[in-house]
Length: 397
Image 1 (cartoon, one colour):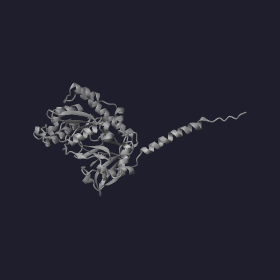
Image 2 (tube, rainbow, N blue to C red):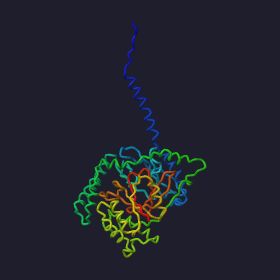
Image 3 (spheres, rainbow, N blue to C red):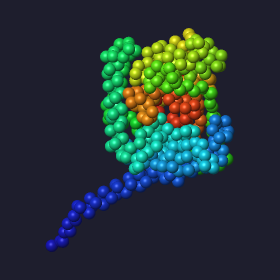
Image 4 (spheres, helix red, strand yellow):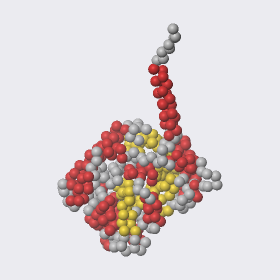
């Protein structure tokens, strides 16, 4: 009688699981970047910085010091925070990613936007939408939920017309549609993956022979004047980022000799200019809509301008942004999701900044902005990792 061997299915099943598990684990390891590697990327970016960059002279000879990890809402490390030091003086900061599906340089500037943390707190980072400190993601999501609730309540109250600065029926309907749930907001805060991120890492860390990073596309900056939205006398300072951004744009254009409704039309009062813009755009307690910014530009630039709202993730958006900067037409830029800067009002839905510059880190595009709720320095953000979160208003003749 022929002997029959019976094999248990369990070892075979285990082997199959291992075969499937090993490649995925290796892939996960490949997607991680150590802070040592990220520091080399920062050092390479500094070494290759275009001499026309506004920080070039200020950062020559600066040493890069690793500061801390940054987290996402799954409690995973998403990035690293570095300080730039000349002797003992801090002269700037960098934020890098910690994953190869995100571009290496996420943000940099002179003064960081991070708040001080208490014992055992982490910083949860959301790119241009800001950051929050907390002990874990559950605590941070709860804090985000409070802001979502506050904003939705403000929108509902505004819709009912309980504020003296009433809005049109169409604007109220638009505002009502902007109410969001917590899950939607949390999902929107994830940084955008970049399909070319791996090559950006490679180009920055190992530039091709005979080609320096500085030889890559140019740097350009406009001297857009800074105006602080919380100056004494400004109406509704917490929601005045839109009117103030428009004021910065108008002041820049006026300085270039254009006939626009800048402070000259308000007895040379910047405060009156901002408040006048607020009335023109019907800015509400939760901010200025993109449609209202288009209306504001239409009514302050004089006739003959074509004004367009452009989503950052639309085709050709980067080139359109660059063309506005090069032609001396600083765009109005709006973050179109919950803003988590700790100094902004909780009910604020949109946050406006004046586009003022651009540059490249390796071959990855960075855009520079002046923030009316911060200070006069420029902050640069990576376009691709933020592109689903903002739009800009372009105007041209």
